[in-house]
Length: 458
Ligand code: NDP
Image 1 (cartoon, helix red, strand yellow):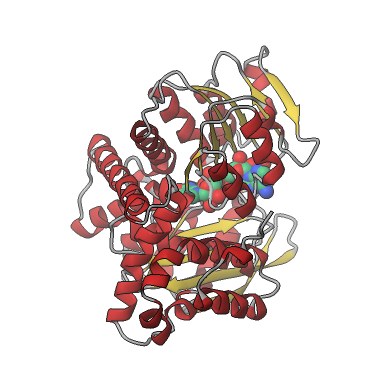
Image 2: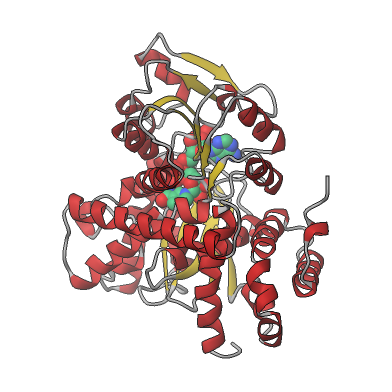
Protein backbone atom coordinates (compact mmCIF):
# COMPACT_ATOMS: atom_id res chain seq x y z
CA UNK A 1 0.00 0.00 0.00
CA UNK A 2 1.34 3.47 -0.93
CA UNK A 3 1.85 5.60 2.19
CA UNK A 4 -0.07 8.87 2.45
CA UNK A 5 3.10 10.95 2.11
CA UNK A 6 4.10 9.27 -1.15
CA UNK A 7 0.89 10.54 -2.73
CA UNK A 8 1.70 14.22 -2.16
CA UNK A 9 2.37 15.99 -5.44
CA UNK A 10 2.92 19.58 -4.34
CA UNK A 11 6.51 20.38 -3.36
CA UNK A 12 5.21 23.21 -1.18
CA UNK A 13 2.92 20.88 0.83
CA UNK A 14 5.75 18.35 1.18
CA UNK A 15 8.12 21.01 2.47
CA UNK A 16 5.63 22.46 4.97
CA UNK A 17 4.69 19.02 6.30
CA UNK A 18 8.37 18.16 6.77
CA UNK A 19 8.94 21.38 8.72
CA UNK A 20 5.89 20.73 10.90
CA UNK A 21 7.04 17.20 11.68
CA UNK A 22 10.50 18.44 12.60
CA UNK A 23 9.29 21.34 14.72
CA UNK A 24 6.52 19.46 16.56
CA UNK A 25 7.93 15.96 16.57
CA UNK A 26 6.24 14.94 19.83
CA UNK A 27 2.80 16.28 18.85
CA UNK A 28 1.31 13.20 17.23
CA UNK A 29 -2.34 14.30 17.10
CA UNK A 30 -1.46 17.75 15.80
CA UNK A 31 0.68 16.31 13.00
CA UNK A 32 -2.11 13.87 12.14
CA UNK A 33 -4.69 16.66 11.87
CA UNK A 34 -2.43 18.90 9.77
CA UNK A 35 -1.49 16.06 7.45
CA UNK A 36 -5.10 15.17 6.80
CA UNK A 37 -5.98 18.76 5.98
CA UNK A 38 -2.96 19.74 3.89
CA UNK A 39 -3.07 16.58 1.80
CA UNK A 40 -6.72 17.09 0.98
CA UNK A 41 -6.07 20.72 0.02
CA UNK A 42 -3.67 19.77 -2.75
CA UNK A 43 -6.04 20.51 -5.65
CA UNK A 44 -6.43 24.13 -4.45
CA UNK A 45 -2.82 24.57 -3.42
CA UNK A 46 -1.44 23.32 -6.72
CA UNK A 47 -3.67 25.85 -8.53
CA UNK A 48 -2.34 28.77 -6.45
CA UNK A 49 1.03 27.45 -5.28
CA UNK A 50 3.05 30.61 -6.05
CA UNK A 51 0.60 32.94 -4.30
CA UNK A 52 0.38 30.80 -1.15
CA UNK A 53 4.10 30.16 -1.02
CA UNK A 54 4.96 33.87 -1.30
CA UNK A 55 2.59 34.61 1.57
CA UNK A 56 3.94 31.63 3.60
CA UNK A 57 0.27 30.83 3.97
CA UNK A 58 0.52 27.21 5.05
CA UNK A 59 3.32 27.97 7.50
CA UNK A 60 1.18 30.70 9.10
CA UNK A 61 -2.01 28.64 9.01
CA UNK A 62 -0.34 25.82 10.95
CA UNK A 63 1.35 28.00 13.58
CA UNK A 64 -1.02 29.17 16.37
CA UNK A 65 -1.23 32.93 16.81
CA UNK A 66 -0.69 32.31 20.52
CA UNK A 67 -0.46 29.42 23.02
CA UNK A 68 -1.10 30.14 26.67
CA UNK A 69 -0.18 27.52 29.26
CA UNK A 70 -0.68 28.09 32.96
CA UNK A 71 -0.67 26.58 36.43
CA UNK A 72 -4.03 25.71 38.02
CA UNK A 73 -3.66 25.15 41.77
CA UNK A 74 -6.72 24.06 43.76
CA UNK A 75 -7.56 22.41 47.06
CA UNK A 76 -9.39 19.07 47.20
CA UNK A 77 -11.98 18.05 49.81
CA UNK A 78 -9.28 16.58 52.06
CA UNK A 79 -7.49 19.93 52.16
CA UNK A 80 -4.70 18.73 49.89
CA UNK A 81 -3.27 21.15 47.33
CA UNK A 82 -3.40 19.85 43.75
CA UNK A 83 -1.86 21.34 40.64
CA UNK A 84 -3.03 20.91 37.04
CA UNK A 85 -1.97 22.49 33.79
CA UNK A 86 -4.32 24.78 31.87
CA UNK A 87 -4.14 25.74 28.18
CA UNK A 88 -5.67 28.08 25.68
CA UNK A 89 -4.57 27.83 22.08
CA UNK A 90 -5.60 30.95 20.15
CA UNK A 91 -5.04 29.56 16.70
CA UNK A 92 -6.47 31.86 14.08
CA UNK A 93 -8.69 34.94 14.38
CA UNK A 94 -8.72 36.00 10.73
CA UNK A 95 -12.49 35.67 10.32
CA UNK A 96 -13.60 36.47 13.88
CA UNK A 97 -12.64 36.22 17.56
CA UNK A 98 -11.14 32.90 18.68
CA UNK A 99 -13.89 30.42 19.49
CA UNK A 100 -13.71 26.83 20.69
CA UNK A 101 -14.40 24.61 23.66
CA UNK A 102 -12.60 23.75 26.86
CA UNK A 103 -11.76 20.09 27.51
CA UNK A 104 -11.12 18.72 31.00
CA UNK A 105 -9.65 15.24 30.64
CA UNK A 106 -6.46 13.58 31.94
CA UNK A 107 -5.23 13.03 28.36
CA UNK A 108 -5.15 16.76 27.57
CA UNK A 109 -1.75 18.00 26.41
CA UNK A 110 -0.43 20.59 23.98
CA UNK A 111 -0.68 18.28 20.99
CA UNK A 112 -4.37 17.58 21.61
CA UNK A 113 -5.11 21.26 22.24
CA UNK A 114 -3.36 22.23 19.00
CA UNK A 115 -5.08 19.59 16.89
CA UNK A 116 -8.46 20.67 18.24
CA UNK A 117 -7.67 24.36 17.74
CA UNK A 118 -6.48 23.73 14.20
CA UNK A 119 -9.63 21.79 13.27
CA UNK A 120 -11.74 24.51 14.85
CA UNK A 121 -10.50 27.12 12.33
CA UNK A 122 -12.01 25.15 9.46
CA UNK A 123 -15.14 24.12 11.31
CA UNK A 124 -15.92 27.67 12.33
CA UNK A 125 -15.37 28.93 8.80
CA UNK A 126 -17.94 26.42 7.53
CA UNK A 127 -20.61 27.63 9.96
CA UNK A 128 -20.92 30.86 7.93
CA UNK A 129 -20.60 32.79 11.24
CA UNK A 130 -17.77 35.27 11.97
CA UNK A 131 -15.73 33.15 14.38
CA UNK A 132 -12.05 32.19 14.41
CA UNK A 133 -10.46 29.04 15.81
CA UNK A 134 -9.26 28.30 19.35
CA UNK A 135 -9.36 25.57 21.97
CA UNK A 136 -8.42 25.11 25.59
CA UNK A 137 -8.65 22.91 28.61
CA UNK A 138 -6.75 21.10 31.29
CA UNK A 139 -5.43 17.68 32.24
CA UNK A 140 -7.81 17.84 35.23
CA UNK A 141 -10.02 14.72 35.57
CA UNK A 142 -13.56 15.64 36.67
CA UNK A 143 -14.51 11.96 37.18
CA UNK A 144 -15.17 11.17 40.84
CA UNK A 145 -14.74 14.80 41.98
CA UNK A 146 -17.33 16.44 44.22
CA UNK A 147 -19.26 19.53 43.06
CA UNK A 148 -17.17 21.65 45.45
CA UNK A 149 -13.91 20.30 44.01
CA UNK A 150 -15.15 20.99 40.48
CA UNK A 151 -16.09 24.52 41.55
CA UNK A 152 -12.73 25.25 43.17
CA UNK A 153 -10.91 23.93 40.11
CA UNK A 154 -13.05 25.99 37.70
CA UNK A 155 -12.53 29.14 39.78
CA UNK A 156 -8.76 28.72 39.80
CA UNK A 157 -8.74 27.92 36.05
CA UNK A 158 -10.79 31.04 35.25
CA UNK A 159 -8.71 33.29 37.52
CA UNK A 160 -5.90 32.85 35.01
CA UNK A 161 -7.87 32.34 31.79
CA UNK A 162 -9.88 35.55 32.21
CA UNK A 163 -6.77 37.59 31.36
CA UNK A 164 -6.89 36.31 27.81
CA UNK A 165 -10.59 36.07 26.88
CA UNK A 166 -13.50 38.43 26.23
CA UNK A 167 -16.64 38.56 24.11
CA UNK A 168 -14.76 40.23 21.24
CA UNK A 169 -11.47 38.43 21.87
CA UNK A 170 -11.90 34.74 22.62
CA UNK A 171 -15.08 32.91 23.59
CA UNK A 172 -14.65 29.45 25.17
CA UNK A 173 -17.44 26.85 25.49
CA UNK A 174 -17.74 23.22 26.66
CA UNK A 175 -16.19 20.03 25.33
CA UNK A 176 -15.32 16.68 26.95
CA UNK A 177 -15.71 17.03 30.73
CA UNK A 178 -17.07 20.57 30.52
CA UNK A 179 -20.86 20.84 30.58
CA UNK A 180 -23.44 23.20 32.06
CA UNK A 181 -22.16 22.78 35.64
CA UNK A 182 -18.58 23.73 34.74
CA UNK A 183 -19.63 26.61 32.46
CA UNK A 184 -21.70 28.01 35.35
CA UNK A 185 -18.73 27.99 37.75
CA UNK A 186 -16.43 29.45 35.09
CA UNK A 187 -18.87 32.23 34.24
CA UNK A 188 -19.43 33.07 37.91
CA UNK A 189 -15.72 33.54 38.50
CA UNK A 190 -15.26 35.57 35.30
CA UNK A 191 -18.10 37.91 36.31
CA UNK A 192 -16.75 38.34 39.84
CA UNK A 193 -13.23 39.22 38.69
CA UNK A 194 -14.29 41.52 35.84
CA UNK A 195 -17.16 43.14 37.71
CA UNK A 196 -19.13 43.26 34.44
CA UNK A 197 -21.89 41.17 32.95
CA UNK A 198 -20.31 40.18 29.66
CA UNK A 199 -22.61 37.26 28.90
CA UNK A 200 -21.05 36.73 25.47
CA UNK A 201 -17.69 35.65 26.90
CA UNK A 202 -18.72 31.99 27.28
CA UNK A 203 -21.28 29.89 25.46
CA UNK A 204 -23.19 26.83 26.64
CA UNK A 205 -24.46 28.88 29.58
CA UNK A 206 -27.53 27.96 31.61
CA UNK A 207 -30.83 29.26 30.27
CA UNK A 208 -31.31 31.45 33.36
CA UNK A 209 -28.21 33.53 32.67
CA UNK A 210 -27.77 34.05 28.95
CA UNK A 211 -27.74 30.55 27.52
CA UNK A 212 -29.54 29.58 24.34
CA UNK A 213 -32.31 27.08 23.96
CA UNK A 214 -31.17 24.15 21.76
CA UNK A 215 -27.44 24.72 22.46
CA UNK A 216 -27.30 21.52 24.52
CA UNK A 217 -28.90 19.55 21.70
CA UNK A 218 -27.11 21.35 18.86
CA UNK A 219 -24.05 19.20 18.12
CA UNK A 220 -25.96 15.92 18.14
CA UNK A 221 -28.97 17.30 16.27
CA UNK A 222 -26.70 19.04 13.77
CA UNK A 223 -24.84 15.79 13.12
CA UNK A 224 -28.11 14.13 12.16
CA UNK A 225 -29.22 17.01 9.95
CA UNK A 226 -25.91 16.73 8.11
CA UNK A 227 -26.23 12.93 7.89
CA UNK A 228 -29.76 13.20 6.49
CA UNK A 229 -28.60 15.69 3.83
CA UNK A 230 -25.61 13.54 2.89
CA UNK A 231 -27.73 10.38 2.60
CA UNK A 232 -30.46 12.17 0.62
CA UNK A 233 -27.87 13.55 -1.81
CA UNK A 234 -26.85 9.93 -2.43
CA UNK A 235 -30.46 8.69 -2.72
CA UNK A 236 -30.47 6.90 0.63
CA UNK A 237 -33.06 7.40 3.35
CA UNK A 238 -32.16 7.59 7.04
CA UNK A 239 -35.57 6.21 7.93
CA UNK A 240 -35.38 2.60 9.17
CA UNK A 241 -31.59 2.43 9.25
CA UNK A 242 -29.76 0.75 12.16
CA UNK A 243 -27.38 3.07 14.02
CA UNK A 244 -24.61 2.57 16.59
CA UNK A 245 -23.14 5.47 18.54
CA UNK A 246 -19.87 5.55 20.45
CA UNK A 247 -19.92 7.68 23.60
CA UNK A 248 -22.84 8.64 25.83
CA UNK A 249 -22.00 12.26 26.57
CA UNK A 250 -23.52 15.45 25.29
CA UNK A 251 -23.00 14.82 21.57
CA UNK A 252 -23.93 11.13 21.69
CA UNK A 253 -27.17 11.62 23.66
CA UNK A 254 -28.63 14.23 21.32
CA UNK A 255 -27.42 12.40 18.23
CA UNK A 256 -29.37 9.41 19.52
CA UNK A 257 -32.47 11.49 20.22
CA UNK A 258 -32.50 13.11 16.76
CA UNK A 259 -31.67 9.86 14.94
CA UNK A 260 -34.73 8.30 16.55
CA UNK A 261 -36.90 11.32 15.69
CA UNK A 262 -35.81 10.95 12.07
CA UNK A 263 -36.89 7.30 12.04
CA UNK A 264 -33.60 5.46 12.58
CA UNK A 265 -33.15 2.63 15.08
CA UNK A 266 -30.26 3.31 17.50
CA UNK A 267 -29.27 -0.05 19.00
CA UNK A 268 -26.01 0.65 20.82
CA UNK A 269 -24.12 3.31 22.79
CA UNK A 270 -20.95 3.22 24.89
CA UNK A 271 -18.59 4.89 27.33
CA UNK A 272 -14.88 4.34 27.86
CA UNK A 273 -15.50 1.03 29.68
CA UNK A 274 -17.91 -0.74 27.33
CA UNK A 275 -21.15 -0.67 25.39
CA UNK A 276 -24.81 -1.55 25.70
CA UNK A 277 -26.91 -3.20 23.01
CA UNK A 278 -30.67 -2.87 23.05
CA UNK A 279 -32.32 -4.53 20.09
CA UNK A 280 -35.57 -2.69 20.80
CA UNK A 281 -33.85 0.67 20.42
CA UNK A 282 -31.95 2.64 23.04
CA UNK A 283 -34.17 4.40 25.58
CA UNK A 284 -32.63 7.86 25.44
CA UNK A 285 -34.44 9.08 28.56
CA UNK A 286 -32.71 6.33 30.54
CA UNK A 287 -29.32 7.39 29.12
CA UNK A 288 -30.05 11.02 30.08
CA UNK A 289 -30.94 9.92 33.61
CA UNK A 290 -27.72 7.86 33.95
CA UNK A 291 -25.34 10.36 32.37
CA UNK A 292 -26.83 13.83 32.90
CA UNK A 293 -28.41 13.35 36.31
CA UNK A 294 -26.59 10.51 38.10
CA UNK A 295 -23.22 10.86 36.31
CA UNK A 296 -23.08 7.05 36.22
CA UNK A 297 -21.70 4.41 33.86
CA UNK A 298 -23.32 3.06 30.70
CA UNK A 299 -23.64 -0.43 32.20
CA UNK A 300 -26.16 1.04 34.69
CA UNK A 301 -28.58 0.87 31.70
CA UNK A 302 -29.17 -2.77 32.65
CA UNK A 303 -30.65 -1.62 35.98
CA UNK A 304 -33.43 0.04 33.97
CA UNK A 305 -33.64 -2.29 30.95
CA UNK A 306 -32.57 -5.79 32.09
CA UNK A 307 -33.11 -7.28 28.60
CA UNK A 308 -30.29 -5.18 27.14
CA UNK A 309 -26.75 -6.55 26.89
CA UNK A 310 -23.53 -5.01 28.20
CA UNK A 311 -20.07 -5.77 26.73
CA UNK A 312 -16.89 -4.62 28.38
CA UNK A 313 -14.13 -3.36 26.04
CA UNK A 314 -11.71 -6.28 25.84
CA UNK A 315 -9.66 -5.71 22.68
CA UNK A 316 -8.30 -2.85 20.58
CA UNK A 317 -11.66 -2.69 18.81
CA UNK A 318 -14.10 -0.97 21.22
CA UNK A 319 -17.04 -3.34 21.80
CA UNK A 320 -19.63 -0.93 20.37
CA UNK A 321 -18.07 -1.25 16.91
CA UNK A 322 -18.54 -5.02 16.91
CA UNK A 323 -22.31 -4.54 16.57
CA UNK A 324 -23.62 -4.56 12.99
CA UNK A 325 -25.15 -1.30 11.76
CA UNK A 326 -25.90 0.69 8.61
CA UNK A 327 -24.75 3.94 10.15
CA UNK A 328 -21.95 4.54 12.64
CA UNK A 329 -21.70 7.73 14.67
CA UNK A 330 -18.43 8.04 16.61
CA UNK A 331 -19.26 10.65 19.29
CA UNK A 332 -16.64 9.97 22.00
CA UNK A 333 -13.05 10.98 21.33
CA UNK A 334 -10.20 11.14 18.81
CA UNK A 335 -8.77 8.07 17.07
CA UNK A 336 -11.59 5.83 18.27
CA UNK A 337 -11.76 4.11 14.86
CA UNK A 338 -8.45 2.81 13.53
CA UNK A 339 -7.87 0.84 10.34
CA UNK A 340 -8.70 -2.49 12.01
CA UNK A 341 -12.02 -1.16 13.31
CA UNK A 342 -12.77 0.42 9.93
CA UNK A 343 -12.17 -2.94 8.24
CA UNK A 344 -14.61 -4.63 10.60
CA UNK A 345 -17.26 -1.95 10.06
CA UNK A 346 -16.95 -2.27 6.27
CA UNK A 347 -17.15 -6.07 6.55
CA UNK A 348 -20.33 -5.59 8.59
CA UNK A 349 -21.85 -3.51 5.77
CA UNK A 350 -21.66 0.07 7.05
CA UNK A 351 -23.13 2.60 4.59
CA UNK A 352 -22.20 5.86 6.29
CA UNK A 353 -20.07 7.20 9.13
CA UNK A 354 -20.83 10.55 10.79
CA UNK A 355 -18.10 12.06 12.93
CA UNK A 356 -19.78 13.59 15.97
CA UNK A 357 -16.44 13.67 17.78
CA UNK A 358 -13.36 15.53 16.59
CA UNK A 359 -11.01 13.35 14.51
CA UNK A 360 -12.56 10.06 15.70
CA UNK A 361 -11.17 8.21 12.67
CA UNK A 362 -7.45 7.84 12.04
CA UNK A 363 -6.22 8.98 8.63
CA UNK A 364 -5.84 5.31 7.57
CA UNK A 365 -9.44 4.61 8.61
CA UNK A 366 -10.69 7.63 6.64
CA UNK A 367 -8.82 6.45 3.56
CA UNK A 368 -10.20 2.93 3.95
CA UNK A 369 -13.79 4.14 4.25
CA UNK A 370 -13.48 6.33 1.17
CA UNK A 371 -11.87 3.54 -0.84
CA UNK A 372 -14.77 1.27 0.10
CA UNK A 373 -17.41 3.85 -0.88
CA UNK A 374 -18.59 4.48 2.66
CA UNK A 375 -20.13 7.94 2.89
CA UNK A 376 -18.10 9.87 5.42
CA UNK A 377 -19.40 13.00 7.16
CA UNK A 378 -16.22 14.71 8.46
CA UNK A 379 -16.26 16.11 12.01
CA UNK A 380 -15.25 19.60 10.93
CA UNK A 381 -18.52 19.86 9.04
CA UNK A 382 -20.84 17.34 10.66
CA UNK A 383 -20.29 18.38 14.29
CA UNK A 384 -20.19 22.11 13.56
CA UNK A 385 -23.77 22.53 14.80
CA UNK A 386 -22.53 23.03 18.36
CA UNK A 387 -20.28 25.94 17.63
CA UNK A 388 -22.76 27.37 15.13
CA UNK A 389 -25.39 27.45 17.87
CA UNK A 390 -22.83 28.95 20.24
CA UNK A 391 -22.56 31.75 17.69
CA UNK A 392 -26.37 32.05 17.80
CA UNK A 393 -26.08 32.28 21.61
CA UNK A 394 -23.58 35.14 21.17
CA UNK A 395 -26.00 36.91 18.79
CA UNK A 396 -28.81 36.64 21.36
CA UNK A 397 -26.47 37.95 24.09
CA UNK A 398 -25.51 40.96 21.95
CA UNK A 399 -29.11 41.70 21.08
CA UNK A 400 -30.22 41.03 24.67
CA UNK A 401 -32.88 38.68 23.35
CA UNK A 402 -33.98 35.07 23.79
CA UNK A 403 -35.14 33.08 20.81
CA UNK A 404 -37.52 30.09 21.05
CA UNK A 405 -36.29 26.49 20.79
CA UNK A 406 -37.98 26.17 17.42
CA UNK A 407 -36.31 29.35 16.09
CA UNK A 408 -32.82 28.23 17.13
CA UNK A 409 -33.37 24.67 15.93
CA UNK A 410 -34.58 25.92 12.53
CA UNK A 411 -31.55 28.19 12.19
CA UNK A 412 -29.31 25.25 13.16
CA UNK A 413 -30.96 23.04 10.55
CA UNK A 414 -30.45 25.67 7.85
CA UNK A 415 -26.81 26.11 8.84
CA UNK A 416 -26.21 22.35 8.62
CA UNK A 417 -27.90 22.24 5.20
CA UNK A 418 -25.61 25.07 4.09
CA UNK A 419 -22.53 23.31 5.48
CA UNK A 420 -23.39 20.15 3.59
CA UNK A 421 -23.89 22.18 0.40
CA UNK A 422 -20.42 23.74 0.79
CA UNK A 423 -18.86 20.27 1.13
CA UNK A 424 -20.83 18.94 -1.83
CA UNK A 425 -20.05 21.93 -4.04
CA UNK A 426 -16.32 21.65 -3.37
CA UNK A 427 -16.52 17.88 -3.97
CA UNK A 428 -18.12 18.53 -7.36
CA UNK A 429 -15.99 21.51 -8.34
CA UNK A 430 -12.73 19.68 -7.71
CA UNK A 431 -13.98 16.31 -8.92
CA UNK A 432 -13.15 14.61 -5.63
CA UNK A 433 -15.36 11.54 -6.17
CA UNK A 434 -17.84 11.89 -3.26
CA UNK A 435 -15.18 12.90 -0.78
CA UNK A 436 -16.81 15.27 1.70
CA UNK A 437 -13.73 15.15 3.93
CA UNK A 438 -11.68 16.95 1.31
CA UNK A 439 -14.76 18.98 0.31
CA UNK A 440 -15.10 20.39 3.84
CA UNK A 441 -11.41 21.21 4.10
CA UNK A 442 -11.33 22.94 0.73
CA UNK A 443 -14.51 25.00 1.28
CA UNK A 444 -13.24 26.21 4.67
CA UNK A 445 -9.69 26.83 3.46
CA UNK A 446 -10.86 29.02 0.58
CA UNK A 447 -12.53 31.36 3.05
CA UNK A 448 -9.80 31.44 5.69
CA UNK A 449 -6.94 31.78 3.19
CA UNK A 450 -8.60 34.74 1.46
CA UNK A 451 -9.14 36.47 4.83
CA UNK A 452 -5.52 35.84 5.83
CA UNK A 453 -4.12 37.13 2.55
CA UNK A 454 -6.33 40.25 2.66
CA UNK A 455 -5.04 41.11 6.13
CA UNK A 456 -1.36 41.04 5.18
CA UNK A 457 1.56 39.25 6.77
CA UNK A 458 0.56 39.06 10.42
P1 NDP B 1 -18.77 14.49 27.08
O1 NDP B 1 -17.76 14.70 28.12
O2 NDP B 1 -20.16 14.93 27.31
O3 NDP B 1 -18.82 12.94 26.69
C1 NDP B 1 -17.68 12.26 26.24
C2 NDP B 1 -18.05 10.81 25.95
O4 NDP B 1 -16.97 10.19 25.29
C3 NDP B 1 -18.30 10.01 27.21
O5 NDP B 1 -19.22 9.00 26.95
C4 NDP B 1 -16.91 9.43 27.51
O6 NDP B 1 -16.92 8.24 28.25
C5 NDP B 1 -16.43 9.14 26.10
N1 NDP B 1 -14.95 9.20 26.08
C6 NDP B 1 -14.18 10.26 26.40
N2 NDP B 1 -12.89 9.94 26.30
C7 NDP B 1 -12.85 8.66 25.90
C8 NDP B 1 -11.81 7.76 25.60
N3 NDP B 1 -10.54 8.11 25.72
N4 NDP B 1 -12.15 6.52 25.19
C9 NDP B 1 -13.45 6.16 25.06
N5 NDP B 1 -14.48 6.98 25.34
C10 NDP B 1 -14.19 8.20 25.75
O7 NDP B 1 -18.17 15.16 25.76
P2 NDP B 1 -18.92 15.64 24.44
O8 NDP B 1 -20.06 14.75 24.12
O9 NDP B 1 -19.14 17.10 24.57
O10 NDP B 1 -17.77 15.46 23.34
C11 NDP B 1 -17.60 14.24 22.61
C12 NDP B 1 -16.79 14.53 21.35
O11 NDP B 1 -17.47 15.49 20.55
C13 NDP B 1 -15.40 15.12 21.58
O12 NDP B 1 -14.53 14.66 20.57
C14 NDP B 1 -15.63 16.62 21.39
O13 NDP B 1 -14.44 17.29 21.04
C15 NDP B 1 -16.62 16.59 20.25
N6 NDP B 1 -17.44 17.79 20.08
C16 NDP B 1 -18.22 18.26 21.10
C17 NDP B 1 -19.01 19.38 20.91
C18 NDP B 1 -19.96 19.86 21.95
O14 NDP B 1 -20.75 20.77 21.64
N7 NDP B 1 -19.97 19.31 23.15
C19 NDP B 1 -18.96 20.13 19.64
C20 NDP B 1 -18.19 19.50 18.61
C21 NDP B 1 -17.44 18.38 18.85
P3 NDP B 1 -16.43 8.25 29.79
O15 NDP B 1 -17.55 8.89 30.57
O16 NDP B 1 -16.22 6.82 30.11
O17 NDP B 1 -15.16 9.05 29.82
